[in-house]
Length: 79
View 1 (cartoon, one colour):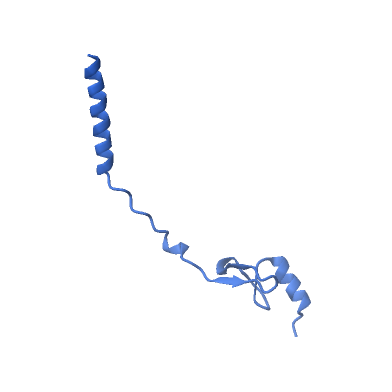
View 2: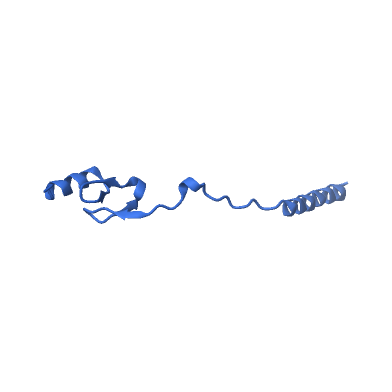
């Protein structure tokens, strides 16, 4: 009886191993088109590079934060 139980366990393990090999691997998912690469822009004040969607437009170019935009515009008044 002991050998029958061992044989049954071995057969189940072999069956599971073969089943796992037959399942095709999932294809790698591509990111959606909305997450496409964006151009990187440099902050005029500090030079930090950031994606175009995160850049703040200002009088002298683009900025990484409101503080840098205000600082730049304060240092370079409009003519």
